Image (tube, rainbow, N blue to C red; front, top):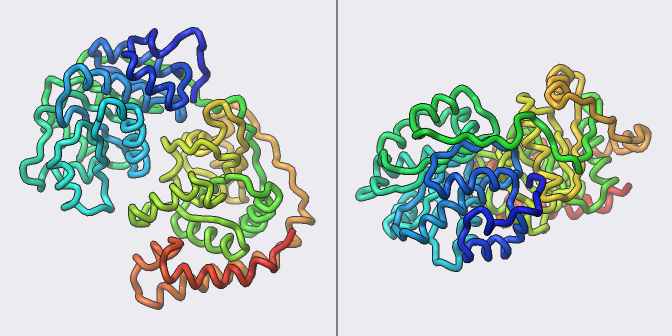
Length: 438
């Protein structure tokens, strides 16, 4: 969350007592910068464009005004929230339900990877708030009989820059065409891209722009490091660092789904409690991985950039960029998963001989040079033979499952702890646990 100004309260912003009490229950003591700027404007029925970095409290900035309006004029299908990823959609739903619990707010998620028929049944119950990804919502607007949003009062677009950069532009245009003109619109984004600017000009009425940070930056309590290592030694140094830091909560970001899965398998073979999260996993598996990590049942989350923005996981001690992100701005979002809500955190970026130029762009964006993370090469390289064995295990395991059915779905989901395939993996992991010692 952004830095707090203790002199301003949620009551001062114009929120009713029920919502102020809900904020207290959520552990929100005082408003963040974006909440201070956006909430009073939204309560005055203004269209709002909010620009703020990740972890700044944007969900509260749009959620609280929507709930206050809903309480004053109760109506089904009152608000639509569009968001780029499934995980973020479920997180927004949880916050809406927590904030609106005392007044009986109903909220549902419409995302891909889940049964459309069941979703249609839920839509038939006409919830107050729908949180959706654009593609699946458009499917329902076109195919689900009797479903429309003609009476909608509020449209929220969260992470608008990412929605448009993920090629949802066509779907968003189609959705906007079937929404009522007489509505309030709030658009929240980390950056004001040309696509976002075009969208706001076409679909917002006299919007008020609020910006709490015009410069890309990370929070003060985040310790940022880099480590220049040969590409072939990345798994060695990852294992060395994970072994050094002990049972801390860690998110490891990889650039591809294949790398994510292979690294997760390798770490599991070494006895680490690692679990993957990437786009082609089924939605239930993705939520399962996320919930196990949040509940601290697993200490290491291997993820693609599907987990880099918006997700609020309270206690992440370390973020490790196993691969340097190609887009410099994604670095800000990745490392923003730690050092949240005033806590400290550590970010380490592995830089191979092939990633120097990309990494230098990140340093230019931050306008700083990162410190080298302290390691002892001799201690790390002791692990070389054992890591090579674990890498062979991961490669064979993936090939075995490919051969077994020739179905990607099997390889996609077999890291879930409840499958028979995973039982075989776990049994082999148990045999290997004693082999790996510091």
